[in-house]
Length: 436
Image 1 (cartoon, rainbow, N blue to C red):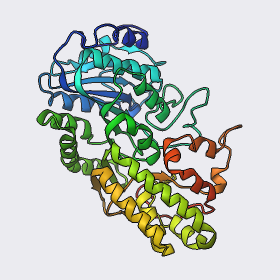
Image 2 (image 1 turned 180 degrees about the vertical axis):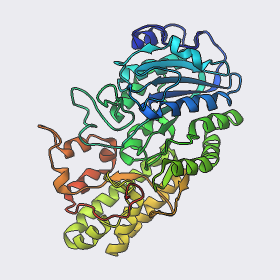
Image 3 (image 1 turned 120 degrees about the vertical axis):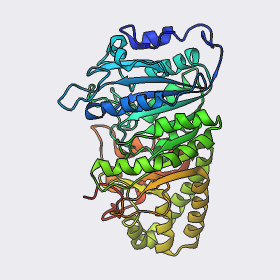
Image 4 (image 1 turned 30 degrees about the vertical axis):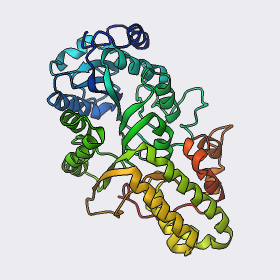
């Protein structure tokens, strides 16, 4: 099998044609894991993914772990930093101990129009991995920029699906993949369920994100913060630890431990006073968090007419992850609400949610640069806004509410009902990032 997969001009048809036939492909010896790295960093960050490839290569054993890498290089500019590919070029190759990075450019394809966000492309890639890199388990890694839930761009009924959810493509007007497209891609593929999804992207540790994909994967690794682009340890460290143990949870826990020092160094090198956090989640435990969140919504809506002042104070005291985004720590919010209202039911709900989160979040690494507020334990982010904004139009025929209430977290917890009731816009909240 050739190491470079993009020998034809039409990427999807090539991936698809190679997924036909014998399920196990030419290699009947299954690896323990196939790790699929999919994404685009772009511009001055193209060299970051190349560094990840180089380091990962040094950690690959013979046959136990296999890696399929697909990367689209960013636009041509004075910040372009790619060494192995040209602006707009798509590389798709099996990364192994024999990969010659300098030759990848010869086997890549000029695919500026290749749509990273198209579910058919990701489905075809997953099918290709199952056929030609068969494994007992599969790990899907997204590498690039992320931005969490955005009501305007995450509305899936637009003619062009554009989101800040998973990736964005600077060559296609920043069009990217949303959670609905990701779910569609997995469900339509030959790999119906993944061992893990690793979001090597910013702001993806959100209830609206992880809940949407939780039924397709056993584990999720993500951050509710902005993630450093320097000293990227997560992908190579995960490969290293999967080599040492076939148990994913053990390997993932060790990955967070091994990554702490380099993550700290990365945040320092970013040059901003940013704290950070990366979390390992067990998908099956997220339902209990949603159950507690649903009870929180019900009680808040009951109390708001008589306890508005206390609840509004809690809304303005809850921890905000990034100053320019309406993303707040859900567990901290439940605790502030219980404390400031003195309501015994809210106290019980907070205790239930605390137990649920501590079961769902198996491990977290917290980076404290000592310059901004921190929490002793981070949960996951949740959108928090007021009724006025929630009712506002995001385009000519769709409002924020219509977009938000499509997501699975709302369907499970009814969170939009609280956003529709709340009259207080969060302001002056303690902030972990972005307050310079």
